[in-house]
Length: 181
Image (cartoon, rainbow, N blue to C red; front, side, top):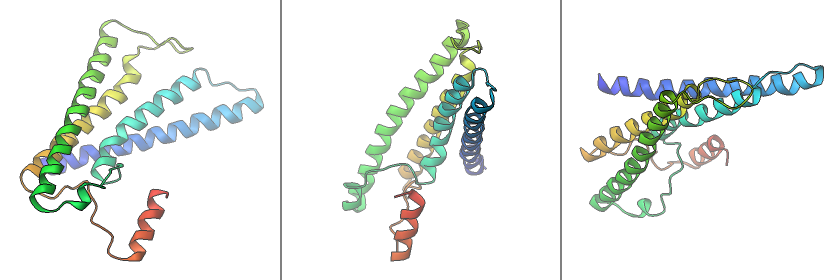
């Protein structure tokens, strides 16, 4: 039950990131095409930048769990057995520490913006905590994903964020195409 809830949370965050990507596209197209015909989208730049922050941070957990986050495997790929497990645990603890630190402070920043009634300084004067929700929520979900993965690897499971090595030359090409290399 918990596994399906967590996977659903990561998937939902990924879908929300995709939705914000579409919002960015529509805003940028509206701003670009609107200039040619004399139509202005008030605060379009602000909305696009807030959407970009939400998209980037909400997509982190899904990217991490899908094994698409950039990882440097120069060391971990050369180590096997128990030494590799310790190295993975060390990396997860470091990741948990950093992500936990940033998530805590992102939530604190958002709460402080709410508490002090900080307002955006652009054309659209809205409370700053509203656009900061995407940033803080994305980091909290990424922290949850790290805790989830830490517990899984601690119990002896293989890291789910790591894809198995490609078995065929076609799979190498397929992964290179998917990654945009």
